[in-house]
Length: 217
Image (cartoon, rainbow, N blue to C red; front, side, top):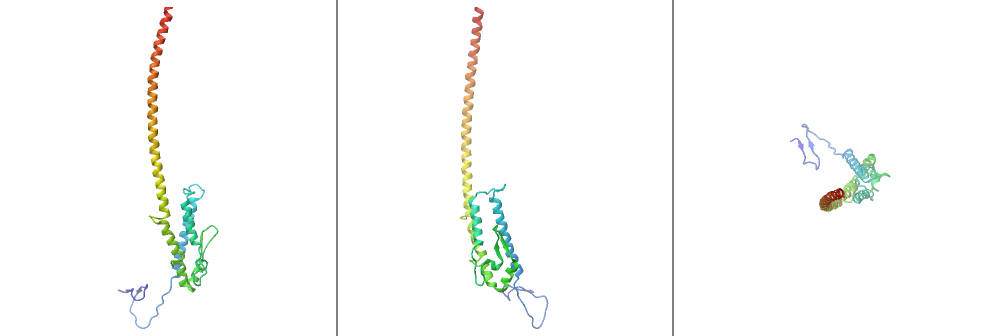
């Protein structure tokens, strides 16, 4: 095969033709690709923050308005962004071109990030992807939030399901009571019709008797 993968770790060499002599091989970091990935995460965070605002605000269609779980999740994610990530030669996320504006949205300066990569590559990687780095902490926080067994979102779903089940049972009980009451009213109405029918028979009898007495006089 002309594709060699076991010479340099993480590097694939595509050999295009035969050659003799000395050659120089330079392996450089793709700073542009790394910057694009950071931009993608920033865009995703901002989209999530906008979704939170749309769902919990006062505008029409904010179906989760007042839901404490959603606010807690938003606050946890936001607090993760605002923590101190000072590391090595870097004084924090600002050194990587990452910051937040007054609305809570993340702002990204790619030129600052690329410059930091060139001068403090290891510190940049640790600040972002290390266990105590920004993305590492975000991942850990999101894992806790979205855990399908013990996560806060699942706990809220379970609570809502329980409320729905309780309301369904109450509705069923109310319908049963309504049917019982309807039967009782129907029976009372039937009995009233029977009594009224007897009264009407008595009325006709009395009218006939009065008519006869009047003729006799």
